[in-house]
Image (tube, rainbow, N blue to C red):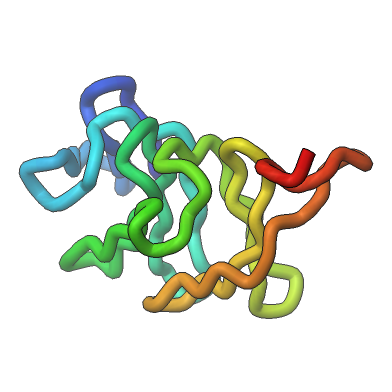
Length: 118
């Protein structure tokens, strides 16, 4: 079970003990605001100001505005219906959540236009 800890990274509880992952381990920011577990076990962490990171159990791959995110604060991650997922920050973006994190397109949410399209 995974928990985001305000300014203390993420905690993983295996049923007996807690393990803590922080920026020292490669997490881009210690304020974790969203967590998503892939069917294959990979973990995605949305952070406040550090973008989103995928953790494969050994190392982090981080994606930020330099990689196409609209904002480096990611507060929600929605799992894939068919190989695509959504990241929530200033708007909702549909992405292909693989090791490349391909930004496919901004999506309108609740009838509102995508961020930056007002």
